[in-house]
Amino acid sequence: MTSAATPLSVARDARGVVTLTLNDPARFNALGSEMLTALQQALDAVAHDDSARVVVLAAEGKAFCAGHNLKDMAAHPELAWYQQLFSQCSRMMLSIHKLPVPVIARVQGMATAAGCQLVAQCDLAVASDNASFATSGIHYGLFCATPSVPLVRNVPAKRAMEMLLTGDFIDAPTALAQGLVNRVVAPDALDAEVEKLVQSIVQKPRAAIAMGKALVYQQRELGLEAAYQLAGQTMAANMMDGAAQEGARAFAEKRAPAWKV
Image (tube, rainbow, N blue to C red; front, side, top):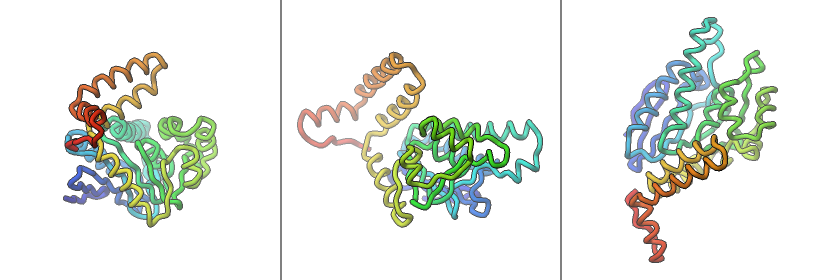
């Protein structure tokens, strides 16, 4: 079933794979209030859909996402307006973080400023080899502060700082080497490469994926001892799930697990 809504299109297949496509190519899929609202509504729907398994975040046009629209920002020189915009954007980014299912960025083109932030915030990212990435706000006197939050959690500190201080672009192979994306392929292989990740994920128990995603991000912010404590509690809870019990029996019986996924 597919529904279309400007500036975001939403599609869902029988496996529970939800594809959100930024669909405002004339504005380089900028994260204005309308786009952010549409994304928030779609992510909230996924969060309450127990049959959803994966989100693929894609885009139409030459750009994946150019971040916030500076023309709109210049037209509203008001602190309250800026605070509302960045608060709205941060809420949307946190929704990706909190979703119980993985979010895969399908990056077919340029991702700049908050668009680069969007890639970094996703759990996984597959890029075309002609994609490019930058936190370019500094060119216009605006340090990419909010994009820095997921960037420094993906990219080594000095690499992230170079991107933030210079605003210079990096190409897709460099983004791969620095950890911003997982895979880089030719443009005509992009969908197939995303599908490889999707297919691998949907074959795994949803509960284990959800617990695992939450744990990875929570423990990263903790000290070592607290991280191990939380991880141990998570694994114990995971083992009480029927899918894990079936997996353990299948291992002991030297057969494939018979999961209902």
